Image 1 (spheres, rainbow, N blue to C red):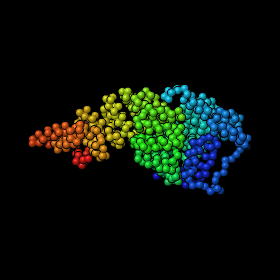
Image 2 (spheres, rainbow, N blue to C red):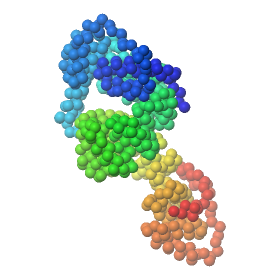
Image 3 (cartoon, rainbow, N blue to C red):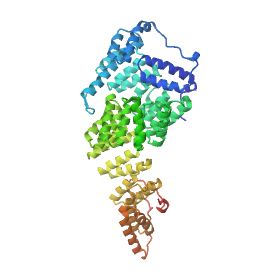
Image 4 (tube, rainbow, N blue to C red):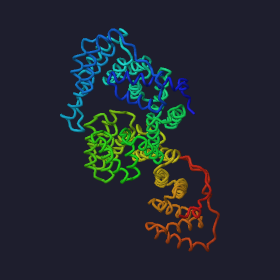
Length: 573
């Protein structure tokens, strides 16, 4: 079990801290952080009245600014950000200063989003920026140098720096914000967007607080270290958060990332039972239903979310997936565009819209959509993989190789990335690299059962008949062992080759078995019958001992395990 912070021994203290930070975040309009803390607090047992935490200290400056802050906060809650900032401009307290700067930041973001939606198409690049960012940076930088920023203001400063692409400075400021206020989940989330690899994560000097365990679990998921993420989340459940819907949703997302679809679906169904009006993460749930082809369930989910809130980003993505499953790709793209109008930084919508444009053979639009997804999150392997597929359609193998490599770096144990890489190397006549990729894809667990087949065909093209035969043999055993042999179109190809191979090597019993199996497939039946006739003609001739099929491999880069002779009888459907 992954080790947890020592603070997990006192759940009462954690509950008090959560109640306090909920109040602090609500007062400053940080609603998502307040929501996260509220969900965790709800998962813990309620406190008796005399153990409830006392309100934060109230200074003389807070008293002087009370009326202005109350008025401005009412405007802020109604999204009248400029109006809120106007009435806070002369205030002195830390809370008022944060609300003043945060209102100006959100005003700029709102204007940027409005301009993006109004003046640009859903895929046009544009250079629309938040015009307030530079002014905010200058003002916050002066206060930071003077040491006058509290944890919330440091968080805002980090956000501004990230928006201005000053990433190294943003990381330093956000780490400082976490040391000043370790309970603020929003700062942890902002930092998670800046961590690019596990080495960078280990190098960060983070506060030793119980929230760090949630952050580490989130980062493990983002960095595709799913085993570590699941260990951490299960430790959190055992540590006292067994009722947390947030943790259940994160575990479901982790299983989704490793394509354990049944486990992820079970968790999402459990989540829906506990929180039937939940919309968060339902777009991921719809992705799973789409992959499984569960049309009635996806239809029910879409109708249910429309009843709850038809103008949420997740709802639009779910409806888009539903239309995509029905092969109505124009309608699907329309709903993904609607999602992007609601939130132009929605990663899933950009990626899914790229998929829809691929289905509609609009490669130019697909490329733009995938590039937008990468701008939102450079760790999104689906966008890199989608770009590789798009350039593959355009017959640009060098571009394919670049994007597939990026996808493979993000998902080193995903066989689909490795097979795609192998195909790109093959097109570039780099057969040695292609062989390595195909074998690696088989070694990590080939989800599509294509790596061995492609490797065998490559050996066949290179006249490496012994190696081709071994790969075809492994391929047939792999297919038969998972009960997919009746549906897989390429089994007949493998049997046909093996039959001829055994015949040439005078292994007539094995050749006869393969020929008989060929007769089970329409496209290989005639060749199977012809081979059986050839075998019967030479049966009466003197049989000489044949070469050992399982002798050491010829000199090539493909590692192949030794196996016993193929026994097709044991795999009879």
